[in-house]
Structure formats: C-alpha cells, structure tokens
Length: 370
View 1: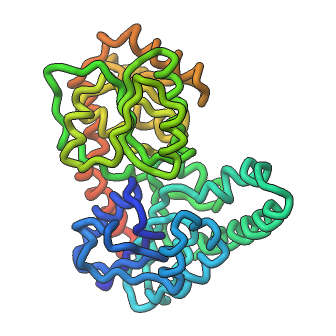
View 2: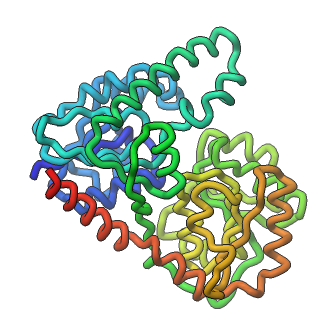
C-alpha cells in the first residue's frame, strides 16, 4: 500500500512528534506531509524520508514564533497537500490536519492528540484577554476554524484518541466516537536507582500551558530544590521568578535524562495535559508523580487501587501555588510508602510495544473494513 503520514509541522520536539516517529518506524515506506518542517527538527526516523510541505512552509518558518497568525491559512495549506493517490492516510492530528483530502478509496485514520485548544477549550478565555479590534478578528477566524474542522472530521473514516479524556472531547466537539490508544512511551529505558537525590524534577516545553510557574513558585515557598529541563518562549519569564533553589538545565539530550529521572524525589506536573508522556517516563524509573488531578494524569497516575497495589503518585486539586505546595507536603508525608518496583510496573502498560500492537490491529481492522 501507499501510505501517507500527515503531521501539522516539524518545528519542535514533543509528544506528538514521538508518536510520528513510531508511526514512521512502523511504516518505513510511508511518505510524510506537513504544513511546515525544518530539517533540524526531523528525527532519525524521519530524516531522509520524503517530507512534503505546504505552500506556506517558508512563510511559517520565517515567522515561526507567530504561527497562530497563519491560522486562517491552515485549511488552505492542508487541502493543498496532494495525498489523493495514497491507499492509507494516518493523520497525527493538530490544527486542520484532519482535513487532508484523499481519494475515493483512501482509508483515512486520524490519531487525535487534542482538539486545538485555541479555538475549542480556551476560546472564551482567549478572546476575553484580547483588545477589542484583535478580539473581533479572533472571533471571526476561530469560528471559521471550528466549523471547518467539524466538517473535516466527518470525512475521516476512523478516529483514535490518545486518552479517554481526549475521546470525550472528540465526542463533544466533533460528534465522533473514537478508540483509545495511549501514545507510545519508551518505558524499557527505565531502571531503579539505588540512591536518590534531594530534588524534584520538571521536564517540559516552557510555555504558559505547561504551568511550570506553579512548580517554581511552590518550590520557592517551600525552599525545595527543583531542576527544570526544557526550553521555550517562557524561559526568560520563568527564570525571573525562580528562587535560589530552582535550577534551569535547558534542553538536554535523551541520553542524559535517565539519570535525572531515576534519582529525583518525585516528578512535578502542574499542566492540564491531554496525556502527558513525561510523568509516565518518570514512573518507568520507579519515581512517584505529584500531578494536577485533571486530564490525562487521571489515567496515567494511580492514587488508589482496589487490589491494594502501591500508589504511583499524589494529586493536587487546583492549578494554584497553594495547591501545589499542599501536594508536595502530602507526598513528603507518605514518601516512604511508595514502592518503586510497582510504580515501574504500572508504567509499562504504556510502553511503545503496546502502542504498536494496538495501532497495527486498529489499522488492520480499518483496511479490512474497506
């Protein structure tokens, strides 16, 4: 079969890109398509493959920090990607990508990371923060994108979601049922350290939605050591609020991450995440997670078990500094009760091998159904 893998852009490295890497490994002859791509962000699994970009590729690269400005052009750019001759399309769904148009006999499977929050979940909050003139433009274009994406999703043949949380949002916004297939996490790299350091760990892109500020301010207040791994647009602002116990390590090679994971006291996670790969990676090293009790964390972190197995972390109820502080103190009060081997075993249900098996079965059923 001729297979096309479609992804919004290769301009950063995150969880969605890791899913594409695994899909590319599963289908080594597949061609890749994107609105925009930069060679330095192409992984070894993708580099050297046919990566086709849209007509606005150079424009997006030139103004990458303002990608949202090109929102009205996304549908036009996606529909300009020529995938009509492919038998199977696997779209790694971000903004507008579900609207790629195959041929009459093409099977289109959309793997949903999340409905675009900018014009779905956060629509009201975003427009409330904008000046009057900008707000009117945002209302117009966000309304257009919602209608366009809804109609585009009706043409997709099969939908998979990366968590039950996302499946519920796909049903709410697009009126589509979907099959939950958790994203791939390389839990096989995990090991249990003999000794642990006196630090908490945060690993994420440094943008507003990740709420790294809450972890920093909480550790400032408690005078706890926090290591922050990652880079992004908010790095300068986050450094400005960090106290003496907070250290920024920047973006680190994958080879250096295992030691940080394995020796931390716990992993701090304050984001309202669709799934959250980093907390699962931390658990693969037997380390507990202190997480905001909402979204994907409710599916990846175990805080009570009817079979009597060890918890894998603790939740805090709100995205406030006080709530994170309370979560850290709750963890420290029961720190000795966590069993690393059981935490590690819990993480293995999200391993890459599980994703590959379930995705192959899902794709196979879709092809047979055609």
